[in-house]
Structures are given as C-alpha cells and as structure tokens.
Image 1 (cartoon, helix red, strand yellow):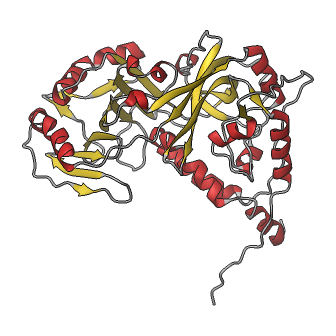
Image 2 (cartoon, helix red, strand yellow):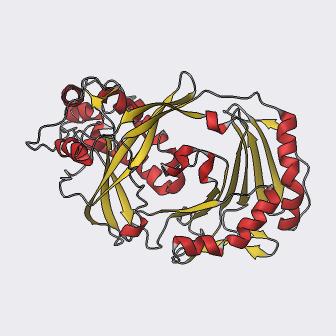
Image 3 (cartoon, helix red, strand yellow):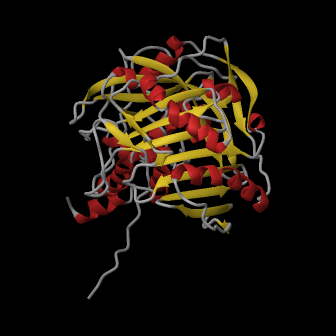
Length: 439
C-alpha cells in the first residue's frame, strides 16, 4: 500500500470516538481485562487498513413507520454513544458461551405498554462524619473475621473524582471505603491478587462447574457472614458468568450478587442492579505468569458492598409509557439492518463479517440508558428487544452468538437516520497527519 493511502486510512479514525467506545464499556473491562486491552490494540492496528462501507442486510419486507413516535432513531443512536459524525449502523457484539443456558436472556414483558425511565440528578453533599459512621459500623466485625486489628485510618479526598475515601490494610487484605454524592461503598481485596479471602476460617471460593443455584447455595454461609458483618440482609441472588473466545479455563469472570429485586422496578427488567447490593467477584484470567487460574474452583478477588445515600426509588423514575411493538414488527427492522448496539467505530463495523439475522436463535429484553454529561445523570432508559444469532465456534470451543438491539417501542425516522449514516461513512473527512522526524 502506498504511504499516502496509509495516511488516509489512519485519518478515518476519530481517536476521541474510539476512546469513548472503550470507556463506555467500563463494565466489560471489569468482566474481561484482556478484552479491553485487545480493543485498544486492535483499534490501533485497524488504523492500517482502509475503511470500507458498512454492509446492511435488506429484504423486501416493508418496514413499519411511526411518524408520531416520541423518540427518533437518531436519539436512539445517541444512547449507544454515537456522535453526529458517525452512526450505529449494521452492527452487533459477540457473546461467547459454552452452552445456551449461560446466555442469561431477560424475559420479554407481556404488556401492551413499556415504561420509559429517566435518571435523576440526585446528589447529597459529601459528609466525612457520615463516611466515618458507615465505616465504623463494620470495621470491628470485619477485622475480627479477618483475624486482625482495626488499623488507623485517614479520610482523604479522592484523586481525579469527586468524593472521599479511606484506603486501609487489614492484615493481608486491602479495604477501600469510598463516598461520592450518591452512595457509600467498600471493597475488600486479597492484597496481592492471588490470596484467598478467609472469613472466620471459611475460604471464599466458588466452583464454576456447578449450576447457578448450586453456586448460590454453596456461598450461603459466606453470605450470612457478610450480612452479619455489614449489618444488612438481601432476599435475592443471581450469578453472572462471562466467557471469551480463547481461554481454556472456563469463565474469565464469575460474579454473585445479593440484592432485593423488589427495591426497584428495573431490577426485574434488566441485568443491572439499581439498588443496594453485595457482590462477590471471581476473576479467572492471567495477566501475569504467576496469576492463579482454574477450570474448576475459583478464589475470590473482590467483595463489594454499595449502599445508596439518596432515595433510590427516585433515582430512576418512570416518566412515561410507550406502546410496545410486536416481535414481528421488530423483525422487519432487524432484517432491514436497522439495528443498534455493538461497535460505533466505523473501522470496527467494517471489519465485522455480515450476519444474516433471519432465522435468529433467541430474543430477549433489556433497557439501555444514555448519559447526560452536562447534567451528570442518565438519559431516558429505552426498552429494547435483543436478538441472538449463532454464528460459529471460537478457538476454545465456545459457541459464538451475534447480539444486536431493536427498540421495543415505536421510533420514528429509521430510514432517514440509517441512510444518513451510510452517507457519513462514505464521506468521512480525511486529514493529512504531521509526523515528527528525528535526525
């Protein structure tokens, strides 16, 4: 390839957009640190290739039109981090699972109307005394269970973030307490990343080979101990498993969350927990040669407890009801390629293999919230149908599903929006880079 052509290819990438794509996947980074590193490396490597047009899947089905809908397709695109100069076109994400039972697909509500939620900018002033009371309530029982004394501690301002923190060492373990304008939290870590956490002589561990119900049952003594230490109780629990396409050791992350489903209406409609909770997180990937990984029993890397300071029932309010479209109507949009989610970087999208979602395998339901950075709160939460299509096997034998999103409510302006995105991809501006030279 000629140097000038390479330079043009480099400038098809908006570095700010790629960074936005990486940072908005913050929870995926928690699930898979390797994947985050690959995205950053892959985005840089992809700059060496010319951007090609994004492929749309069309058929002859007439798509439904809702000219009086409350939301437009362009606004829906913004929920996924799409900027004015790029668009969420024919895109999807890959989901890796050893078997279909681990897809964790939310059930579609059997209602004519679906709620539209909006995050409220609720905040409470920082309060050192409140944080001290929060910490002192469990420091003694925690130290007793860990077999150590309560250390001296100091409340400090958080670096780079608005908030307060206490970073202390309880024997071999790191205990990090934080406060922001919305909640107090504490994280308990095995200090060097390789050591079991032991509470009252009980090793915290989970066997990934067990079913979700068996894992929850096996952790019941630890759950009760944590409830006693933290002075809380939750009635519900769920298991979160995350896989990739290359590990030979099963899950790369396993999480168990204790919460009250009834604490917020969204808890029963979405993967995210929108209320107080305790999570026990097991990582199972190798960053360094001496990291401990296993295809069976996992040791804990983090215990996290979050307690809201604000009224969580008012944090995400239902502001309206919208008529739910039928699965058949959503399928017409799906087959037309009028879908959301997945990659928003044009190079990433152009590198994706075309997926024909006709004959898809599963459909589910999720809410997606955008973020209002100006007011520091979430935008409207829109309900979506999720579609899964089996597309092959990964190198470690996991099944790969393509997952994409179609709004589950009436949305206007599909054709105009997606046609404009195609045009923008064809007319992405090209700039001539300036290279530094050394003598």
